[in-house]
Image 1 (cartoon, rainbow over the protein chains, first blue to last red):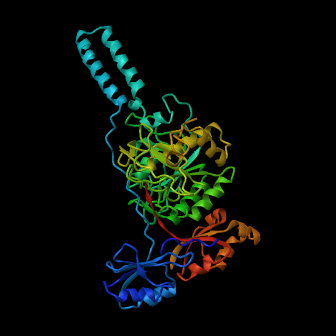
Image 2 (tube, rainbow over the protein chains, first blue to last red):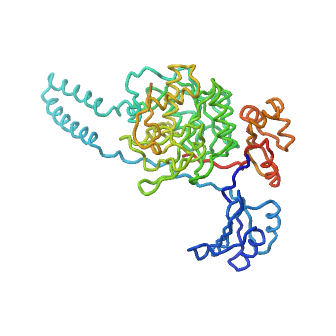
Image 3 (cartoon, rainbow over the protein chains, first blue to last red):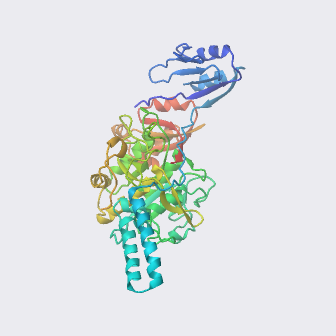
Length: 435
Length: 76
């Protein structure tokens, strides 16, 4: 299969804006540059089949085009040319959003109102003493549990159906989190990780210790202490065996090759579920990445293989615009995860299906998600990154329920047991639910 | 030299009778020294360094489904 070249391979940077830049490009192109319609300072030349168009931005003295090695060598020595660089910069996804204030809802309003009434009455009765004061205190606790279990559980757990005294814990199931590493010393992980054993860095020159925070946050959602230091549970599968593969550096970026190494290591270590809150953005119509698809497909077709789960991406800004699911989530054999808020509405940043590939498969809580953070603390952040480990944790719970499940069966049960929320292109099959 | 990820076409490998034990040899014959032989064997994906001019040659090889530069991903 001949891969389609959809983006120009190189960027030519000229020393200055001048007429002769056009001649340099024309000397390389099969078709000649002409004025782009409606754009005063852009010249274009249509690419041959399978090639991208050549574009010369005359006012910027920059051109983008497909170039062979011979053409690069020829133009590099041209005195008008400052540099030729490979076009390998990908769109930087929207960064993880910081904590957003809790949205005011009827539920939170009622809770606050009720608490105020009870506190006032309780203070009055406390001064009086007796059984009434005690009874009112019990009412207060029960009301809290009914209206908002956030005292003991994150809202995310409640929304996926994981309530107090829930029976499955992910015991006996190995889940890998490929991310920026982990805070090895966070008390909520109980010293569970040893570098070189169940935590490995694939990033050159960096240990598995997470200096970013993203990996610690994602790992915490999958599996951490069932009774964390803060008292509020936020993990889905506390007894799952976690593998931590550091494939993104402390700045939060990483090469495909390191990620592939991480997937291979995780599978080799027995991971049945791999959570990947990472990716690169796509434009509508862009292909998915063949290497990732082949890896996921191989795993999907092995009875003891692993289910690969990836974040759909955060490039949308609803209601103004939406962006398509990125790579590797766009690969058909990856389960792509969208993010919803506490009202189970699609998060404003969540990517959607906008072309024939890049489906959204499932949704999970991804806005103002509370979890562990390096330094022994906690943080609430947002992103499809935060939704992804919720699905990975739920996958572990299903596998605990039936360990012989194949990846295909696991995929099917996760989708079929989800709570339908709306448009497939946004939510996929719906909100993930625990077994 | 540029770092690439080469995805082999599993159907074509099967057609040509190339099994897992011989895949490393085949990759080397194409000028690919895979950094992770385990991943090559398991996934039929080779991460390797190639000369710029070998890009086209690899893409035209029927055994190769895709050649992509080693791109950057971000925490999202």
